[in-house]
Length: 332
Image 1 (tube, rainbow, N blue to C red):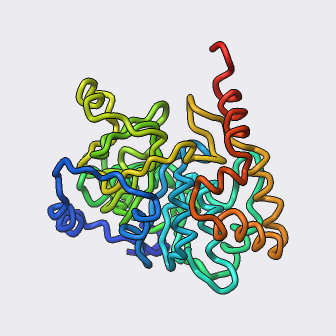
Image 2 (cartoon, rainbow, N blue to C red):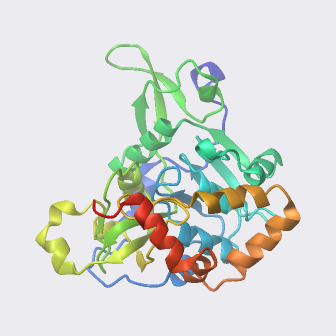
């Protein structure tokens, strides 16, 4: 098929639902206790060469603790779905430093930028290095690709990207609608090997609750072959059974549950705490100089045992209380 009828970008994941089903058939549906540490979950479920999906949107409800651990354990040659990835992409890009290669393949919709905060100097450096293979999409296109995978179909038809250069640099195909004869874009299903998603509440089995916008995380949890959940707090199973309609991600999608209070920091958590704009600015500042950036990473990530130490270095309980008050003012 020529470029007029489709893009020329690389397709990083096989969209065949029957191949994905071979894996999903082997997945246990048993209601077992999945609570573990972030370190153990990443060690067991994130492998070199995997394709990774990251939950949240912008700095909203990102799985920072899990992403730090992927960086800390020095995973290599990962693929990544850049679906409005801001600070999460910035964290992963830090793994491409001094000849090391955490990111190798990126489906890019929104990366490098931290929205109104500016561009990440190091993420830009990585993407301009030629070290990373790139395929272009829009945010909606990546969401549709996850929706197709969650539904068990090989592609999702849409009119998104028609007439744009984004289509030319994507791996999508243009087909004729069998009903109208008009062109539609076939967006291939996206089945990540592993996903990291931060939620408000989860029980020990992995039944999860998200307060506020879920973005594409419900589809991501159903599309990914392995799912690591980090949660603000664990809730008893009796609570999820009393109000089953509040469950957004069901237990059978989840492989590990890790309780990580403030686990989206320095991102925000709707209804819990605001983003730490000062710390996000610090990331952007130190990235301008590779020497300062190395020192920063050694201090805040590689030199820490885990996320609780990182939080302590960033101001600990005092700073967290300020961010909670900013998100939910006293008396409201």
